[in-house]
Length: 526
Image (tube, rainbow, N blue to C red):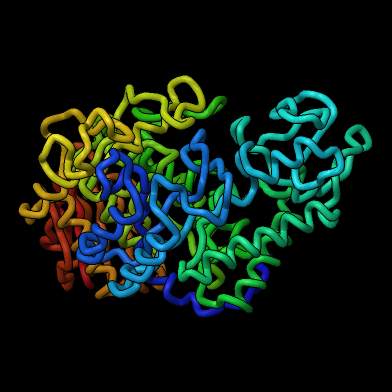
């Protein structure tokens, strides 16, 4: 059952194009080799030109950076490497003048083990702000202070879980606290206070890291949903234009739990992953395997699993929230991974921007920046052998200088090495090439804006689920065909004689058929 919540004034989100900025790798304004907030501000003209209207920043808070900033030591302070609170306010205001909103990454479920609250709790046996047990166990870490026992880590050992309570008690673990205990109640209040701090400075909302993880031992996420609906109700009253976006990976669960949107990701299901994950980047999670994805030149993949998952999710969230299709992110392999590069990326973007979901572009994907293997393990990037997330976190490739225009520092001082390939794609090179991936992405964004029926609001009806994938949008007004296969293809479509091409690349309509080249796509108005 979908719990109806006040829509607030977040209608702007339905037409949004999101762009994820990994701040330490995007643009360095002060020459120290690490990207910063002023660097992001200096590149806003580019994002405006591209057509982006929402920027999501990975965590910018004070941190020891043992998990690249997801280990927060002060939720109300900007990390010195990124600048100051005034720099953030300047960025938010400069973005607003260009019609761009800024979202922050909210780490709600844990802190750093260097956070003052945790350091105090490690010395106080009566403190309830974190989860403590008397003995070691899965993800329990020995106390670093005078307090006896072990604390529960939410992800890495350096990230103690904030105590929002347990949905169920267990007589074998009497230290479990209910969700209404004083410590969990204080953490709920603190969560609202942190959000209020940044919203008063003008940010447009939050992407909530590990949003599913707050309440422990919560089958079906019932208590977790109650917590987030409480937050959503507070937002609707105080900041009705603020957006709440989940890192959950289950829109059918997270939207009823109070979120405006959630990502179709690898966390809790197949989703977008079955279309793009070719196994050439990050290793599969333990116990899982990677099948041939649909966007693969071998023509051995299928979109059917994605379509099944999509239909089930969209039936639950329709009219209540949104699913987001990301190109990739800081925790996944890039879109350009292994053999899939260059022209092979165009049909992926063509589908992403004509599907009834919100599109999110990970920085650099719009030019085809590739996943880089054999990167150094930096700030907790390698969680497991073969699973080094740094491969998707290299510096943005702005131009053809040795430092790619990312920084004036010597490249050896860069946060991470740049792509060593001399033919690496760059913004500067693609700006002067009208046939480039960058121009294609810009055209797709503009087309989506000009034809709302290609966006979130219209329906979708799949006509062919092979190579090519063909579907109608907006009650048949539009027809989209994408062919990621390595061979040409022909598909017959009734009524095609009256189609008007809106944007085509390697596709042509002729005598009721669409003739498609390898990596071609076509978008038609019927």
